[in-house]
Image (cartoon, rainbow, N blue to C red; front, top):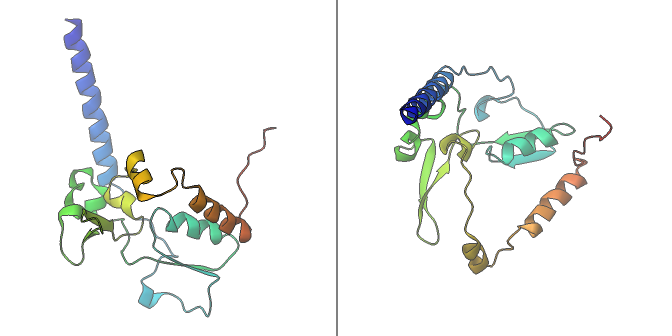
Length: 176
């Protein structure tokens, strides 16, 4: 009898969580971003300190960080994710990946090793089309490809680049 009640309780909790998630995603309103423009209607500025191509999970935070002290232009070939039910509605999770039209949120391509894949075409990048999941290659693949397993050379370049433009590491005070 106890097993039945545990199963019933678990089912109720799952249903409630799913309902909350669906209502939240479907009811998300598009913010009024005054800084976001179509390229043809953006304000004319004679120069930018930095131009970042790609408004994905790396480009957006990099633009925010650099724009604290610099004039930054972020270029993204896709549009805003807000108001698009294929992104904001969990039930439409697979829609961007199965849409092959030229205006799709994702672009299919075949990698050099002949793996069919999809590249995001929306502000926010792959987190908008893959529900925020992050995957990483297996250690054997990384070793076979000749990559450094911790990506230390790449991470060092990122760190040095940020330090060069005056972005210091965030180190909260321990006396708080």
